[in-house]
Figure 1 (cartoon, rainbow, N blue to C red):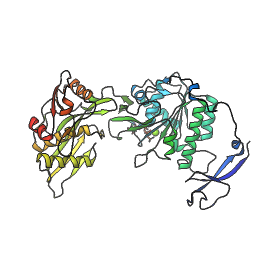
Figure 2 (cartoon, helix red, strand yellow):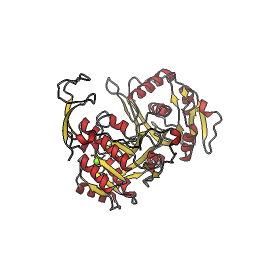
Figure 3 (cartoon, rainbow, N blue to C red):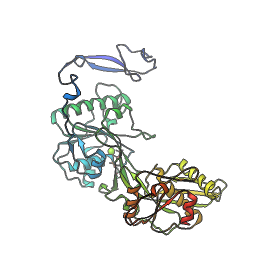
Figure 4 (cartoon, rainbow, N blue to C red):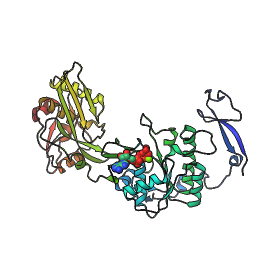
Amino acid sequence: MAKEKIVYYCTECGTTHPRWSGKCPDCGAWNSMEERKVSKKSQKIKITNKNQPRPLKDSQHKKIKRITTYNQEFDRVLGGGFVRGSVLLLGGEPGVGKSTLMLQVMDKITDKKCIYFSGEESEEQIRMRAQRVGIQNGEILLSCENSLEKIMHYMDKMNPDIIVVDSIQTIYSEQINNIPGSITQVKECSGQLTRKAKEVGCITVFVGHITKSGNIAGPKVMEHLVDSVLYLEGGENDLYRVLRSIKNRFGSTNEVGIFSMEEKGLKSVKNPSSFFLSERKAEVPGTAIAVSMEGTRPLLIEIQALVTNSSYGNPQRTAHGIGYKRLAMLVAVLEKRAGYQMGTQDIFVNIVGGMKIDETALNLSLVAAMASSFRDVSLPADSAFIGEVGLVGEVRSVPFIKQRVQEAAKFGYENIFIPGRNADNLNVNNANITGVHSIEHFFSLVF
Ligand SMILES: Nc1ncnc2c1ncn2[C@@H]1O[C@H](COP(=O)(O)OP(=O)(O)OP(=O)(O)O)[C@@H](O)[C@H]1O
Ligand SMILES: [Mg+2]
């Protein structure tokens, strides 16, 4: 066995020192020193020709080979499938469905050796979930190992094609004295597993917890280390889940995958627009259809508003799915530019289905829904509203207008109100397009 030596590692600046001290001599941080065992053998430097610097022109261009997951939405977010040796981080709120998603992904990859390391759940719990969601692939290997060294041993010995580490916060290195989940442990474990994944060409997925502020718990360096960072979003009580990639070294970060959470696990939503509009009542005042872009896909969504006399002195403003500040801004524009006196009204706005959307192209439908509820008059039947509303009440152009209009027309929303500048020379089958320049102009057409 290689001899071990004790060094002291500063968790703030990453330097190592032979002796402990209360203050790091390099960065001056207090109480940041941690004891670490270092194998003497690992300090020897081996030089191989493999990584010797070479001119760019000598490197052969190889087309990236993708390994499909046979899960259309997951593949879409990855950019066409997994890449051999790539390392991914999948984050999400507790209970959103991370473990379920990874089990379902491994289920379909029957021609590859997959190991699922779970440091959080017992084999029994995983088997129960597998049974509930109808996992067919009995060849998936399960292990409740959470020692880094042992996981790396299995990676060497069993030569898997794909491993899932659920979650990276439960893995610990026996060489470090900190508890699992601490910054030092997560940094060390993710770093060593990433190096091993690249060395043996194994696709590695780390499942990661999310902090209250929405970041993946642990060091930020983990997000830099991995090739892709995916987030699974959606409240535990929402029907749908959205998978987004916020970093992808092998594809675009524009694409999103939409799933519905059912008893049988996560199901790809093939037609998201009809999914979100399935229970709509069009004839009621206060509802409007908007077209949002989720990645490169247009998505029809329903905006609902309720504007009612406030019984108390302090009117409420409540927004679900859009930012509160955007709501306040649009209410101010309605008051100032269209003369709607909303100072004494309670205003509630909701994006149906629990989606959260930042896109400014939703502004026109938000304004339309609020005005419709305030006046208690429903909007014209079969209509959709697309456009950004500026502070002086102007309706500004938005990108991807043709795709948005086509999606609305496809679902029978044939009267489509869009920004005037976008309407020039735009023709779409089965769509009756009206260009609007300002909200005053818009209201003169719809009410
Ligand atoms: N019988 C069931 N029917 C429908 N949905 C269920 C059922 N059991 C569990 N679920 C769903 O599965 C979710 C839990 O999934 P999963 O354990 O994969 O989430 P997770 O993100 O891995 O959670 P954690 O952060 O705790 O590891 C629940 O929140 C619930 O939405
Ligand atoms: Mg889990």
